[in-house]
Length: 355
Image (tube, rainbow, N blue to C red; front, top):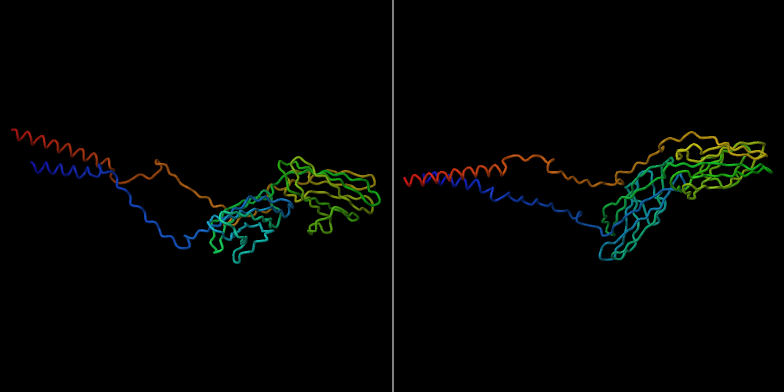
């Protein structure tokens, strides 16, 4: 009987030990040893500012400011690497040179920076799309680099092409006197934001020539007229007024005035016809066909220029996979049952001893 009692108590103690002791602590995971190249960290960092392209709608440009900072404790030369997406190019960057073997990449800067100092580089970025592009965004990137060639992580910046908008064109012509006339043009920004410039074209028949303003030398109106670039900023709701002086020979003439590029505008009143004669004339207000809903060319950012999103996953407890195997509560129930059995055997022994 004593042997049976001792065995029962021993079994209960063995089963209860894991429950009372609690869960075992997990062993720390071994951390991989970083390679020498991974341990090198550049003390030169770089950040690029947002770029808005504007001005000439056929080839818009915009300023890019890059801040280069020396976060180290000693003076160092601060370089930066610039990457641009497809359909964007570096127009002006005196301290930049192309990186051989890497398309659309430049190495810039190199000025001495004291510890903790910062320098701002001002560059010019432009659209290199073969056709006018509107309402498009793309991403460039910059990264700091020290004199030893150690490069920091790339930081992304956004490039905004001009948005599509609405402009209203109106014009009147003075009488033709001594073979000359003046067409008074008014262009109103009926959109909801400022624009950085627009293009105006005059399609002329034989016997009519634009005397001023100076025509843009781009080859788009050769033999048929004149393209006039209006690079001034035009705020929403305001009107740009200017005169176009024409020389006219051979009687009554008709000229076509229009805003360009046509795929930029969401309204119809962007073109009209003006008749030139001895009594003067006004724009007939002929409407153009509405432009297409989207741009004809859409620049696609390169893979390196696209911003990399860091995704963090936090799964709630209810969505986690269920645990398998025997749980601690099961061990506890078995231990309690064995303790009760041991206590019963002990009581039985005492009664047998008394009897």
